[in-house]
Image 1 (tube, rainbow, N blue to C red):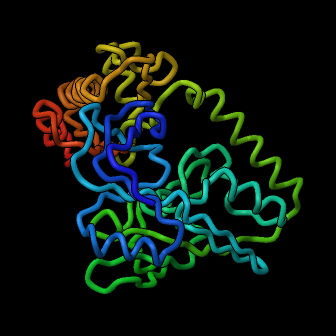
Image 2: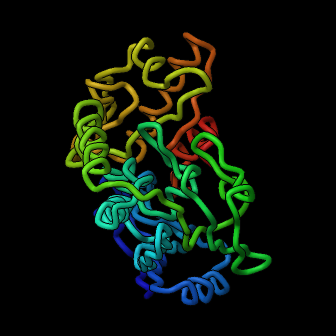
Length: 297
């Protein structure tokens, strides 16, 4: 359950990251509570699909929820643990002829993170199918939050404003035919294959959130960042809102690239882009400086 000096690099979607001083892998909610009681300041992550971990590592504790992965279907309802991969849950919903999770079919993340950020794509999002979640609250322990309690809006929830950790979520799905669900999944997969980099190219998905009424990709494209390269990282040539690790990028390379992308858009359009990527680190002063500028910490 506990590993010290854990090398996280292979776990992250960016394939970047140094050693974590204390890495925990609880398999149940009870184990999670036990760890959080002992390590109240522990950083909580799932599959680390949108987290940039510093190449200089992290001196504190990290809890990875990927082993909290139980799934239970009941009628048109499904309860999934925080560590369940979105892709897996989407495909299981298809097997049960239940619609509503087709947008997850190519998501690299897990349920906890997807609820945390109200993930969505192709006209669907978590808020549309969400019923409730079991959430860890430092002051009260496990609490249950409804959709209203979650304060969902574009790519955000109350869990980003308070020290909450999503451990389990219940969704209400819609009965449909397997053919219709599969057709929607195929459309989503085709879109992602044409518009987004393959997961075989180390990346964290969209780098910045879309500003209200606009597209981060459009702003970045017009700011001329496509193909921009710093160190071992570059902005994808086919879409300006994706950063690719060419194989030897450091976390500082990524952050410097994000800083340049942010600065060019601010200078040209007076728009301050907000990162979708989260950061875990703190040992590198230059990284901390950039993270403060980008409101990553």
